[in-house]
Image (cartoon, rainbow over all chains, first blue to last red):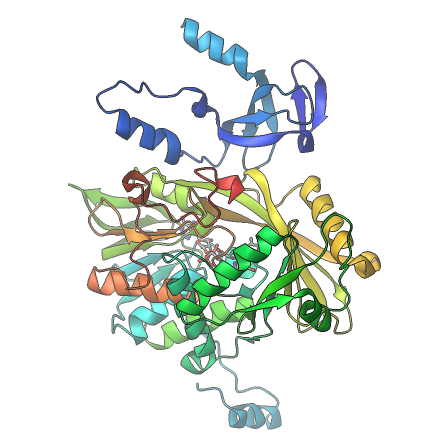
Length: 94
Length: 416
Ligand SMILES: Cc1cc2nc3c(=O)[nH]c(=O)nc-3n(C[C@H](O)[C@H](O)[C@H](O)COP(=O)(O)OP(=O)(O)OC[C@H]3O[C@@H](n4cnc5c(N)ncnc54)[C@H](O)[C@@H]3O)c2cc1C
């Protein structure tokens, strides 16, 4: 798989480490009344879709940035790559 | 038909025309006591034990493809009971004992071959961890031997002992471990279940569940609706996809694991050998092919095929440990979809939906579990209580903080 890094261009997937579902970016509110249930969902439960999937990759052997890769888990085809910090900022603003 | 030496001679003398198909191909009935979803090793084993041990025979196994098309026909066939934690080890030792009697139980040759597994140690810390694990194995009634470097050298002299970075210091040996013929396991269980009246229905995909007021009373399939008092899902890599049809999310991610086989070679490797400092395990099949593999690719996948980085990694490990294999030619490679759980251990439990049961999360180690998983699942389905060796395989253990994390890697499936 080739991941098209937004800053560095196409890089081999072996330069990266895969963390998991991009929803891991949005931590639950620890002060919420149902924080325990929310953290259980956050830590352990996954949609694990067959098809389009947004996931976190870390460019460990490169510039050490976190990326959000949109990839099809049936074909391994990558349709979008974003810098995780851009996505996180946008989510904070909205 | 019972298989015996006599039946082989008789059929041999009459042109082998007397052999019959090993199971029937019935159409689904409108209703069963228990419907098992998934005709892999675990589904078929569950049907066998339900019928033979627990006397429940009004059972159907629904398989979306053909028997053996999933991981049961894709694995590297290693059978062992060398776990550490008490949630796991007694279960796997129960499985090992069932393996040891399986051919008699099924009247079918599954080519169970107890040629041993040797886990190599490359550091003091690893040797100490193996000593501890060996003690846990002995306490569960399994066998375990801690070998020093000389004993390992005696057994497998061809290893690269003096690798500058990862010298071999010793190993943990389980002599009763070994390999079995994976397809034969599926076929043997299918034949036995069928002979007890279980309907095995291939090309029948479960597309939904009949759920009303929190109770499941059947399944929707590509061959129509089928009612059941109990529905037992065991679809391995497809767990999340199938359970989503019942509105459930699972503590599971699907990952791809690859495996490789070389052309047939003369007998070289006596048992199963695992490299403790990298990701490589290897054995030799009865046909002579070296069967080997490494780690999962590390990203979510339903593709049943992997990518180059892991192939390179496995080849490099092989050259580090067994340089003499550098010229062996690769015959085939393939991938299977693993149901990686959040603590690396499986689940055999009821679900919050009445009448719906779940078995999954086997990661890359569910082949050896096939007999015990079938027995424990059948026990749960027949009695509504967990089998004594599977009490910790609960679906809610993540919410309860009762994880069974052999590696201590935390809730990240690609590290287990
Ligand atoms: C490359 C590789 C190497 C491995 N090596 C080992 C090893 O050495 N030792 C070991 O112990 N384990 C090993 N494993 C793991 C082991 O193979 C699996 O854990 C185990 O086979 C899973 O259980 P199963 O046999 O029931 O799965 P499967 O055979 O995958 O059965 C699940 C079945 O469910 C069916 N299904 C899916 N969706 C539906 C639906 N909607 N309706 C109806 N049916 C459906 C599938 O078609 C499939 O046949 C390995 C796996 C792989 C891929």
